[in-house]
Length: 628
Ligand SMILES: [Zn+2]
Image 1 (cartoon, rainbow, N blue to C red):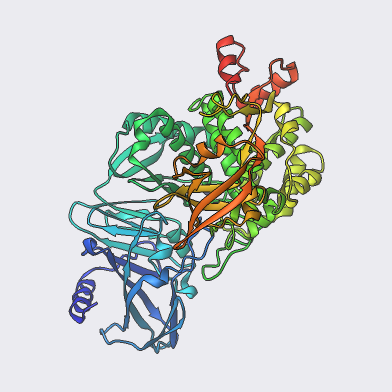
Image 2 (image 1 turned 60 degrees about the vertical axis):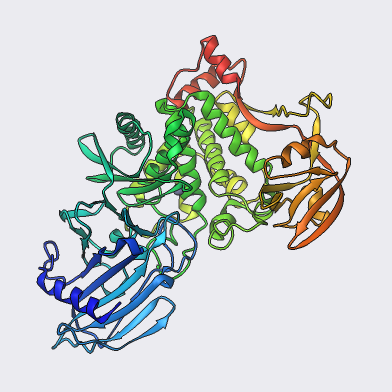
């Protein structure tokens, strides 16, 4: 930042009244975010720490952001840093670790100093959902924008936005006016990102509580439908917990090419999706799964949190063995909510469930890592997507959702369907309120066992603490569903005179489209390519002389017979390499879920209690169900 720019900011700040509406005697911290050159993807931040009484003040950028359990080091994009006293005199400072600036302020109790810190940030991380600024908008997650002054972490924070004319601000923070916002402490600030720009704004109410949908981007969405479908999700999940734990809620939505996913926050969420989401009912229903997932987090992880991530340690990894519940149980409820309110039909629900089961059962890592281990090592394994991931890890999302289903069914079975995982969720919400020390893995077992009226430790041992299979067949049978292997019908099957039930050739490779062929993303340990020496990033250009590309790999793999010799021609770095192997085999089917043909009365009753709708008796409905 130039000296002139610093002077201009300083002059501007002197003219602004400091917002202290809620602060009382507490001096707190005031941030001013200056978006006066958004086209440069930069953002200037003025951080005021009034009435500082210490010799030194250390301010730090968090190393990660809540909701994404991996070290991101946003301090790396701090471009400039300076500190001043109330007279505008520059104060000396030093970097004391990768994310911390320590300022020599010389404040004392007798003569406190009004410290002003000014820094500039480069903001071009869109899909990390940390900070992104351009000529059209700014998305700002405070964990990557606002530094922490630890002694005032619990104090009120005011945040002021200077943005181009016509831009508005949508955030879960309390608004003091259209440019000034209040957080009761730094943790709430960090959990309340800001969307600033000329985004669309939709509003709806549930139980008299206002909800907003702030949409940056373009797409064919139907505003009425968004309001209605979002409200259905809010109502259904609110009913599980008994109430909506906020006075206002904001759905921030980015609709842009090439992005996806979402992050939960205190009384808001940031969700990202592609414009094509709104072009087909299928992709739209997929998107509703994201909405449902993020909203369920309002309770699960934004109110009751695992010990280890409550309170947050912003400087280091926060270890917990319970991400399977924070994320997996949330994943269990995302589709279940949609099915219960009818935003997806039963057929679609079973299809999604089948996909999750198939993904787990085709992952060699299922025999290696438990859900607790996957949770604990999220920082270095699951959330750092390396090519060996499928061999050594399970997803605390996918397997966590399935473990939640098993536990839910066990509680329902043991209580004659009178109690369920819904009760566990409600009790967790009551017993571990926001700001508490969080729950331990043992607390979850204790609460679930109390709800079930039986010690559930053995089922947690099987599902959560140990690697290996989940008793899914038993769990699904309780509500009249069953797992089966659904044949895959491929283009070559007829030509090769192969029935869909037969075994098919399997190499054990996951590929993507590369520059010239199929680029190997992962080599699975249960296929022959692993021992034969195919490695990640090899680019396969031919199998047995037939040209391969990203889009044709699977078709050519399927044209082989199990046990057949295959020669792979591939480029490894800049060398052509030939690898011979014998094709392995695997069932020519995927795991899928369907309704049993002749349910017992007990199964029908259990299903209806679980799904909150009648067992489809009508023949048409049943046919849909049997489609898997
Ligand atoms: Zn989540």
